Image 1: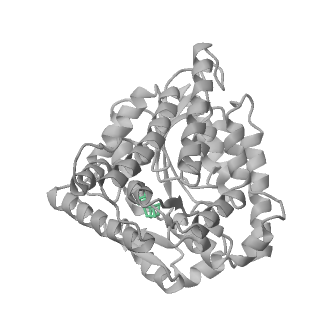
Image 2: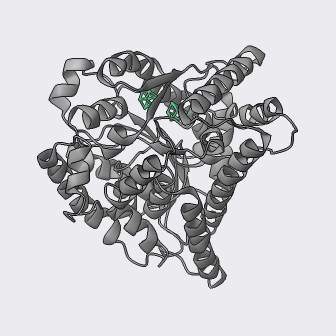
Amino acid sequence: MPTESTDYRQMWSDLGLDLEAHDALLEVLGQGYQAVFLSQQNRPKGMEYFDFVMSEVHGLRVKELLDEKAAGRKVFGSFCVFVPEEIVKAADGTLVGLCTGADFAMDAVEEYLPRNTCALIKSAFGFKLGKVCPYIESVDLIIGENTCDGKKKAYETLDTIVPNLYVMDLPQVKNARGRELLKVEYMRFLRKVEELSGVTIDVARMKQGIARVNAKRAALHRLAALRAVAPAPISGLDALLINQVSFYDDTERFTQSVNAICDELDARVAAGEGVSPKGTPRILMSGCPMAVPNWKLPWVIESAGGVIVGEESCVGERGMRGLVSDEGETLEELISNIVDRYFDIDCAIFTPNTDRLGHVREMHESYAADGVIHYSLNFCQPYQMESYPVAQALQNEGVPVLRIETDYSPEDAEQLKTRVEAFLEMIQ
Ligand code: SF4
Ligand code: SF4
């Protein structure tokens, strides 16, 4: 994982990072990456590209973003898949995800946030307060969104710590009023992007933004479809990593690299080759998003002898499902198309959120999964609350479900392993 090269120290220092703390973070992440990813057997060769991206995620990629800025283009950072990348691209900007997958500077974080806040929100604060995230220090605009109560209230506090926070309002109910609110907010966001970038977004630019993001999603759809085959041609860990990298990498280079690995996986499928033997229990993960470097549960599942074949998650299928239509002659029509695609995201902050259960069922069937592992972060009320009805409905239909609640600390790894092993044994 992140580079140990000293070439970037001046860049990190200029960004205001705490170099000592940052070194410590890179060392831990490097060891974790080695143990979780590089120790896997029979990885596709195409993973070398994603290993390289991860090795340079705090180095070369950050330098590229700073070069973009020096050339006059803007960089935006977000925490949620409701932020429409198409609009950012239409203004020649770059959208990156902001790290929320590891604990850092927890003592400082708990001065600002209650202890019983989910690890994902705490992580965003920890990376900022601990001065270890080159992305949050590089972006021109941090985009928050009113989704769960935890995030909504945390952004009020984050606004006192950072100078460049913009908060997008989001609907909580899927009706005509909710759709209208999303459209109004996407228009407001478009104006903000125009104001910041100095670019006027016209129909041609918007269509180009839509096409670029559609190409990226189509490549990820291709990867997802390949995982439906038995034996699975790629591990769940590697597929998760590709989805995680989608939030950081250059769009076109990423799209090309995903298509290249899919060509390789096509050949594996044609030859009947997989990463694990036939009969390996196939698991569908469902629940909270897993941001870099949150790899604990997938690692537990795959090292216990299962293979993850899909993620019903925002870092996975919930976040990448569907494409945006480019039909339309006005900006208003194109924004409507964007709303159509994003309004279908079945995040647990919506009430009711019945589509999600339908999607879990559909994925369980189409990926030929043997069981579902529902993952929620401790203190995440939306997904914890939904885990009960989702699990009940699936179990009533004969689908085995294991509900896991955890956080980012490694302390429960052994206990999780015991539970996962028992579940895999039961469904085998
Ligand atoms: S789970 Fe909901 S709030 Fe979180 S990234 Fe997904 S859509 Fe956004
Ligand atoms: S939806 Fe859950 S995991 Fe996501 S930020 Fe809110 S509490 Fe945390």
